[in-house]
Length: 228
Length: 219
Image (cartoon, rainbow over all chains, first blue to last red; front, side, top):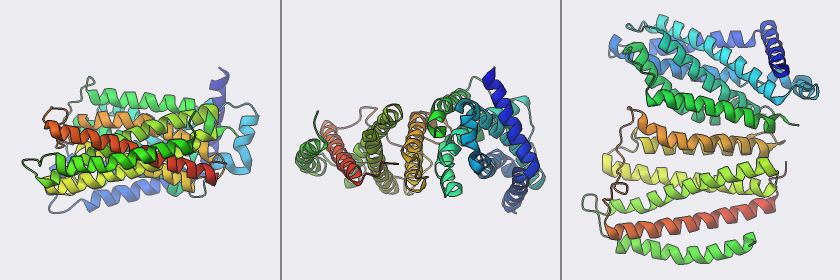
């Protein structure tokens, strides 16, 4: 109960900070529009017909999500390091577990909003026909974003003090997410275009297994990155 | 308990004895392959480097867990040594695979499960080395150990799962698994694997001793 209260407190703190400064909102929307427009328009040519555009749409949407998301979550601990606020939180009795969960939930919400925005803008700029959202796709997006959030919550803590964090973080975060991206792309093709996603598929089992694994890894390893 | 210096000396003598034998086995003893001819001999270096790199990953996992649990700097030195040798071995696997691929498939790189797996492993190791070099000075060994654990738990899933993805067609020859290797070739491969493992052990021990002397594991 105490941990849940701490998680909610930290979420409220991060939300208030973001609403006050609006850094993530501006950068997120800006990058989403820029990259979606570039992707949608760059692939519009006489040699790429609508059917091809539709078939590459899911993979491209996840690729753009990966880039934008990596940019946004690099700043996870930025405000916590100002005035040694993170040390203050730990000394005040906030557990590393609560900090990890608050970052995970925050990153999850950022990811969901980001992917929704990317999907919407890409639909506008690429005009790919035959894309239909269904409940299976929404559930798939939630699982993938949860995996990315779990991984980013622990990986961002590794670069919190690094001078080159914006360059360093993508170097190991992107390869770690590569497999999840491939699976997401494959399953998105099945559900968005072919409408034939089977929840008995080994890829779904693998995706869920990786998500659970990264959440558990984060829970067990966060102690080693936040202890001062 | 043997000291690092003694282990190094034993491995030096063993490797010095095994490498000429392994080279003789793969270039002279093993018969030429019917289809690919002399190009096929790269297989002995490619496969043995791949197996040795998996052993390095296992060592890395063991060292990272040891460091996080015991806080003993010995494990940190072992982790650094394992990663650098794993990086070298993975580079050998990729390079030799690409040379072999060019001869076999006509392209340097194909979207094939094992090649993609090793490319990802190489990228992950590069990320670890980048964190090691450019990460914060404080708590560097702990942060690296955490990343090492995450990398090592991702590796088996990566190896297993890429084969499930239909986009990646299995083009890699599976002669060993399907028992299609000539007995002489199998013997040569075994010698190469043992020699490569000995070389790996030698390099890890050497690098471990250098890291300890440099004292770079101290935060």
